[in-house]
Length: 209
Image 1: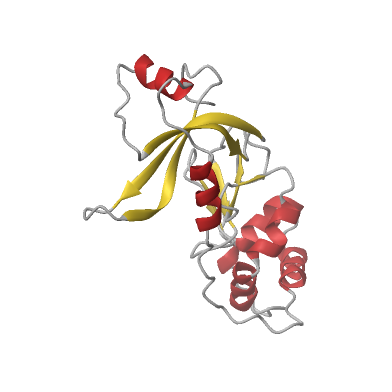
Image 2: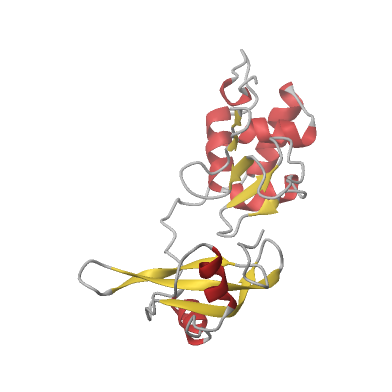
């Protein structure tokens, strides 16, 4: 793939480096509009698609387009090894090239407005959601969670840190699944932040798709 992010002309109409940087800063604003068939990742920091053209993925898709973080505005297709920067992605979505592409990139970047200052985004606080899930969990004994372990040749460890939840929301499949909730702990025994969820089929015979 030609990397249009580094193209230079003898009489440039735009400062392409500035346009590219602004597109990276504002990636979360314009990428979802250009790639409407892509699926928003669970953490809402990336789009998942079939390839760099933004086609709808089957399951998770092999291509990731980052909305946030150090690779914001960049897309990576792990099946082909291809990658695309912000201006490349606009070319993929619009079919434009040369001067028309750079004009569109500058328009999307809003170069007539001052770029917002890059600031560290505070880490989201999931403590209330974790507390809600833990409160809705029950011991494994007699649950389909225990059936799942038994099908794998495992027994219920009778640990208060491994529980069963009858209805774990899965945003990708847009439904609830039964599942296991595991609480993590540090070496000193203190609770670590976060939980691990394992989505199960309704009968506990295997993991949910």
